[in-house]
Amino acid sequence: MSEAGWIVAAVLAGLGLLAFVFRTRLLAVFGYELQRIDPQHSADDELRGAVDDFRRDGQAVREDRDRVGGLFDLDELEVSDVMVHRTNMRSVNADDPPEAMVREILQSPHTRLPLWKGSLDNIVGVLHAKNLLRALNDVGNDFSRIDVMKIASKPWFVPDTTTLQEQLNAFLRRKAHFAIVVDEYGEVEGLVTLEDIMEEIVGEIADEHDVDVQGVKQEADGSVVVDGTVPIRDLNRALDWNLPDEEATTIAGLVIHEAQSIPDEKQAFTFHGKRFVVMKRDKNRIARLRIKPAGDI
Image (cartoon, rainbow, N blue to C red; front, side):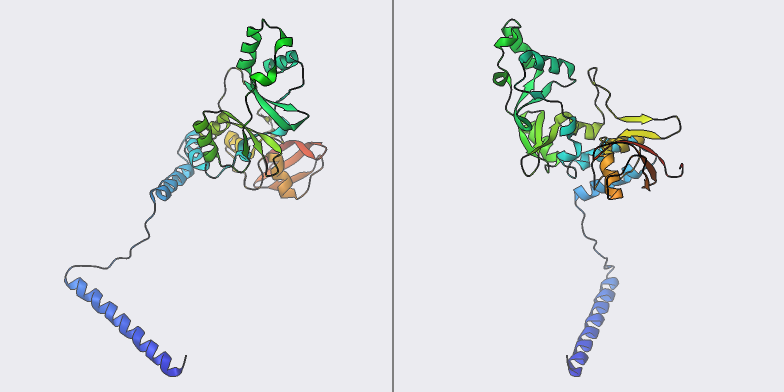
């Protein structure tokens, strides 16, 4: 811009400022005052802010903070964050004799078990204990007359990236309780139930048939022995910790992420205010860890 252009621009800017001051003074004469208008926040933003304040409130009961916060976490979490991983998934080989299947179901704390043929990636049905026992009763408990595939329900496959809110809505819409989780290649990653999602809101739901498989043991010296497969979110809730779960789902995954390697047994690491000691390694998997405050080395 030429020198004359800069002069014109400066004059116009000055005139604009004078006009603004004049309007402000004129409005003041009549009792009006210009105020800054802040951007309007949506009701959802305001509610989320209130929830964040509540979760930070040290006076609030921890269980109440978790439940209220859990409602808003449903849109941020995916089914892969809460599913039962395939390595911990109880299932039944559809080619097994019916008596073996009955035995497996009776020994399981679950009422629904996936059926597979050939490999776990080939889920062919979902067997409900009630349907199996009803069919047995109809044939006078003659196992040889049972056709498991006829009483099994069709499996429902859902992507591992489905949010918990979407999955909850789908469960309610389909009046279903059980889904198989698959990755982008269609390979089975695990399973998710309606109960898994509800527990994100209300906490652990236990009944008289549940088996205690928490995988967390408090030691007398104040340390905690944890199975590598324990989800970080469950550990945070149980012990009121604040370990990050953005990069890993399980406590073993967190250690591997931070170490940038698969640690050997007896290796120790300090991060996020905790000291992690690898107690047991099974091939390329961290099976058990001891965790204590970073100061207690």
